[in-house]
Amino acid sequence: MEMKLLESQQQLNSELNSSWLGSFISTVIGNIKLSIGNIHIRYEDIESNPGHPFAAGLVLSKLSAVTVDDHGKETFATGGDLDRVKKSVELESLALYFDSDSSPWSVDKPWEDLLPSEWSQVFEFRKQDSSSTASKTHTYILRPISGKAKYTKVHIDEAKRSGQALQNAAVDLDDVTLSLSKVSTLGQPPLSSFK
Image (cartoon, rainbow, N blue to C red; front, side):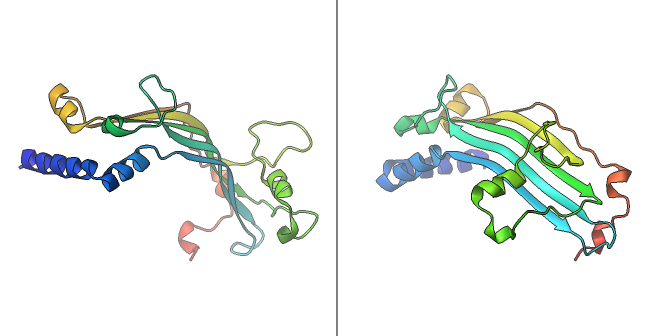
């Protein structure tokens, strides 16, 4: 049964790749490049637990994914190269924080009047900065993590011939630290009370 499924999938793939549209779609999907950076999403709440305001946030410095060759250099895959796709993913400083008894951030003018550069200054994410302009310190649930991942997809014939997996992924994270202390949630209502 499994062999018939693999053969029908292979036949469908070869039919798609033989058409111009199928080839075009394979080229686009095989070469998608992703780059996201400087993300800071913050939620502030002063009403749900009077006297104990809090803020929660997600911070991401960089997330990128590109197609690479056998030597790890960025490339553009076409034709037969699409049978064997390699992707490289890089993650820099992904973090979650929960600041209890934290006053809402304030700025000198209405939020809607801030320029993009002023937004950046308010939400700037700094790992460690002792200067007076340093951003607020946070109580992290997930401390900033960074890492790299490699993904490889080989052609179905190659996987059968060599006995290796059709898809392979390897993830290397620098450090993953999860932390939720009693102090950070002191005075906060249980999550079930938020509707």
